[in-house]
Image (cartoon, rainbow, N blue to C red; front, side, top):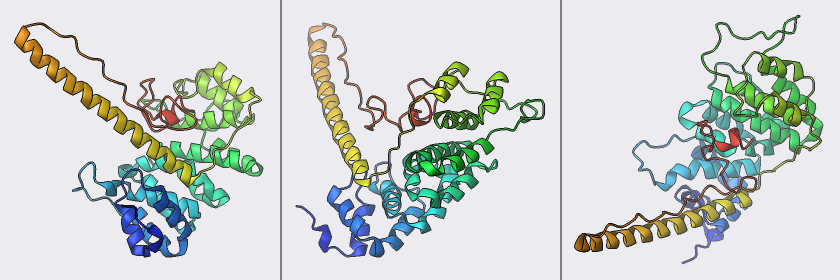
Length: 318
């Protein structure tokens, strides 16, 4: 039975959204897009509310903050900005950066002060600071007139050089490479920022750059000097949910094939027991990856196949 979402009250729509699961009905999203004034207070509450630790793994309410956040970004609701930043800073919510980093650029320059504050806060966790480099890249792509301001912020996240051109880096040396500097350098290379070249080359020279992020110094120079323009991927809420639905359908198809093969194996195993003839295991189908326009084979939120442990969008997907 098809739900008439237009006939629902604001509380009823919020309830539908809260229990919609991973891939809500597109008509529900379209109706919510039209009801900003009514839904904004409830969506802010959904975004800010902590999850219940007693929820089972497949409880649909885990996705409620994601849907609320997407709609608030679509509205460009300013009251949501401090909530996003608080969630990003919370280690328990580090996945928020995966869902919202580039989407936050839809706020335009209104988001820039908060992004700058988080990126340059050396007391914050590294991962949310890294996710801000993606936000800044998208801001520069969508709003080219602000590119100079964006590059200044990114340069400020790199260690400075002293009068002799040497890095003023932490001492004693960190036990592991700074992922933040590597991602900032990658963003600056994509922005073709020549002013940061001495800092980035010094980072390479002193062994601070993680080659798994952008590559070696030759790769950096190729990216820096490339004539390829920075292209934007503006947040489109309907396209976002179309992709989610496609992924859910693809995973359901994979699961059905997987169960079919398991059932066949069970029958063959029973037959083999009766005849004492060994059987070879069947080849399982590959589990589908997250579908994204720019990474058709590996999802941007999936682990990078290089084995770095980072998400693909923050590793080779860059």
